[in-house]
Amino acid sequence: FEKASGEAPAKRIKSRTKRSGNRKIPVYGYLCAAAFGALGAVFFNLLLALSRLPELFPSAGTIGAAAGEGNTALQFLVVCLILPTAEELVFRGLGYFGLRRFYGPIFTGVLTASLFGIFHGNAPQTLYAFCMGLLLAHTAEACRSLISVILFHWAANVNSFFFLGDPAGQKLLYSVPF
Image (tube, rainbow, N blue to C red):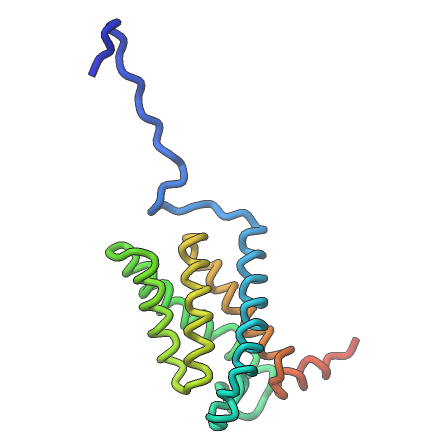
């Protein structure tokens, strides 16, 4: 439409941060995602301890048990880096970002968090993983970046491995000469 004065209409300027587009995330954004993961791990591990679910389901084991017995450095590599990367590629990469194109963030976040929790296989880890899955979905929605959720997951697992009661992780941490 032209204005009455005969001037051409002003062109609409497209926003650089489209809802579905890639955003450039500053370094502190990735650091915040990692800190959010570490703090989430502490909070939900404390909540899990207060729930007494590990006492009711003693076969749950620890995060280090996922990699089996043996070399603690190998356990660290598998549990803290390889498995979280694979899980995020599946649950947030294919799951969240794939479904997010068709459904809203709440439905997609709850669905992928539920699947993430069920994937972990026992009651205490299912509850913990569901709660962390919700935080991961929030991080995915806020950052629109698979790298940010991978860093979140790495930080959560590293925190759990070293500082939240896993004997294998504590053994590795205290064996490093300072």
